[in-house]
Length: 62
Image (cartoon, rainbow, N blue to C red; front, side):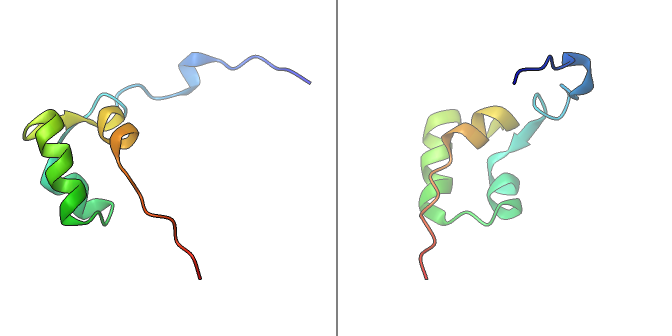
């Protein structure tokens, strides 16, 4: 089954929002290694999409 998605239904501003790397890491509970890696990739600031796509999360096992 397929259906069409209206692109105007998604808010584009939240994806293009500029975040300081430190604030993003605190918001998403990322460790210091992830913060360092993101800073080497992007500097001090990056968009939300860039940060979310480049975060390395460790799997949570029992």
